[in-house]
Image (cartoon, rainbow over all chains, first blue to last red; front, side):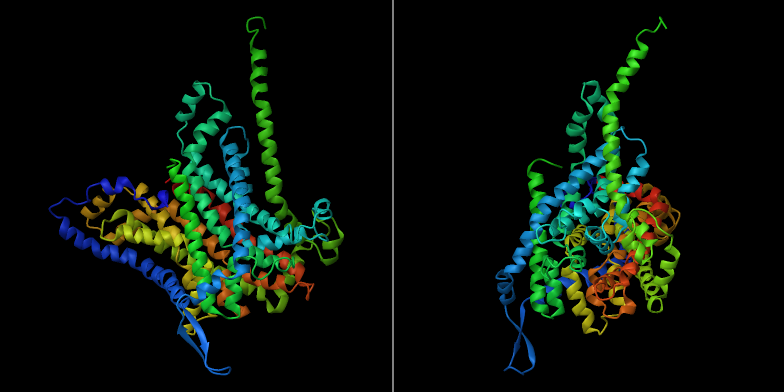
Length: 313
Length: 293
């Protein structure tokens, strides 16, 4: 999490606000203020973030045992028994592989489009920038469930205004539905990512381009050699968020179950966890969500490490 | 004419130079605009049609204008359950986003402006909260609330929605950059307490960032689906997304729900679209602070 987690150097290098002589009592006075500022968020964070994670981990270590067929169910410590079930669960790992394939295709397309549109908005070739920026961003205001319902109708052959496409290709069949869902996700998030990259572009001082232009660099060259490297932190940030989002995919495919029989109840890892909670088998569901969280961490950090090694900021 | 023989040729050449890239760029923008807006246009047009026209007429152009009738039907259906869902969403979202923004701002501000032991630890722990998958939280939260017999209540969705770790990050970045230490020092010399300084000076300086945090928090809670799906079984507590989802799953058995889902979807988008339009100036400046750092 380089650009997220690194502390701001300007802060840490600065001397404390009060002089050294009165620093101690001053600190004491601020301690109360700090507590008042931090505690409300801190308590809620502990209750609704840290406690559930801890609870998940504990739950995942237990198994439900019955004495005889009709005996009362009892939770006993089972060690890693649930995790053995997770690792031998074929459909779960198929769904993880499905999401990795989904992400490997959808994330580059979405961010490539977002980057291209941000560069075009910044290129000076466009009139009506305000309009385009807003038009591309509007889908972000559409809830994932609603976007999926809307596109589900658009893909349905009887209703769709896209008849030329829907009459030749079944967009809801087992082979295509994953990419139909990818299109929904892309539609919602391109504008959001574009805006983050565009904001980064806007903060580049224009003198940087003028020097390059004097050296005879064209528009493409400036975009490739100056703009893209400078907005790399924003691209890395959006990629990490996209990786997390992909592994957590739930509402869009869950909605698509109404439109396509090809979407099963274990189509994505999150859907598996959710369907287990409905049975309910919370211990196994907890083990699944712990594994999913760890997978997310590993993939996000692997990506960050890979970009760091290539000398990116 | 003869004094400037090169001028017209030069103008033409310069225009030639940029007219091709310019029109190519505008063409791409135009195609993308169609892609992003066409589904919404379809939704709007569909919302204005009655049932026969919805299937029988051009899906991208108006037939008779029945939008108000359709909205009337939607609000009347089963004693106005849709209105209740919308109000629920407003209560979950508005409340959680307002209060959540305040809490995140206070915490981020303290992390930026005070030096205290454990500051970096708190910041890093909160920040890794951004990476935690929603299911890893929703399910154990359901079990924890279950221990207090509090699942299927307003609070089961509202309380967890207050926590916005990314808001803390944005608030810290913005407080570092936008609230000068000298100003805080001056306020201290004038005898203002730390809390009062925050509310009267710092929060005001941070306001563009606060609007951004509020908007993104608002979107996140408004769009939240998993937590209410797991927590709530009483239809009367549903937010609008969960309500529309439950209708959509029943369309094959109850075909008249289709029209209601279409109009309901349109209405569920409206509050966010309006909020984004009205607060454009703020989120545009605010979003850059998060992206650049």
